[in-house]
Length: 300
Image (cartoon, rainbow, N blue to C red; front, side, top):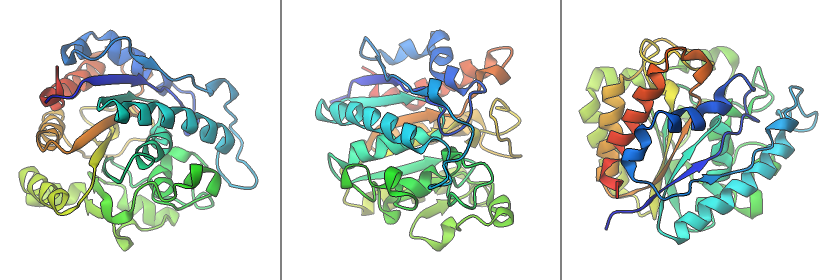
């Protein structure tokens, strides 16, 4: 039976900065394209704490806005848990990547879920090593239990996802992480299919390997985190931290659709698209169409 898609608008920028990413949900919805998903109405709007954004690092954790992100995450996790109870398919529109810190404990409170992390960046910095203190560059580290307890251990659920249950796809900042002294994602149990691997092996081979690994894990489902900077910088420059290379929109559509076809996907989050950098509105339309095609199996 096809799941009902529930859109959750969660436009938090507490883990980044208020440069436009907070408009992601409204702009994608206003394209009109997402109505093809026949999602449940009304959509859920998570109250943000963006008005309290502080650009200065917290002295104890070395992070930006840790208390506000903790509080926002607790709200978001309750909505995620509610949708899992209803057997719905949540489509969470961010915001920045720190929304994952609310999503994964919500899932963990209901079972044992994996994470498919589509991102140009590893997002694996330790707070002290981050050049910005932004949680958006350390969210994967946080949800796997690395970082301050205020964020890694909400409701004593640490870790929200085990390393072996994480699949990172599309990383292309490996040299940059070395330069800035980030933890090395490859020295963990996380499975990494970086952009170089996709180029050399081919996307279909990588998809086959990912699905084979998913089949080996005895989990309740997988969450997809879709940071739009995994898309080629040539096709999607509307992100705050740009890197050369990346997947085409067509490749991203194909990847999402093949993952959804497994029947193992529980929900998806979309982050980092900055409408202020998309003056024509064309990128918003392409992202929306990518989601519609990618999630077509779950349309009702």
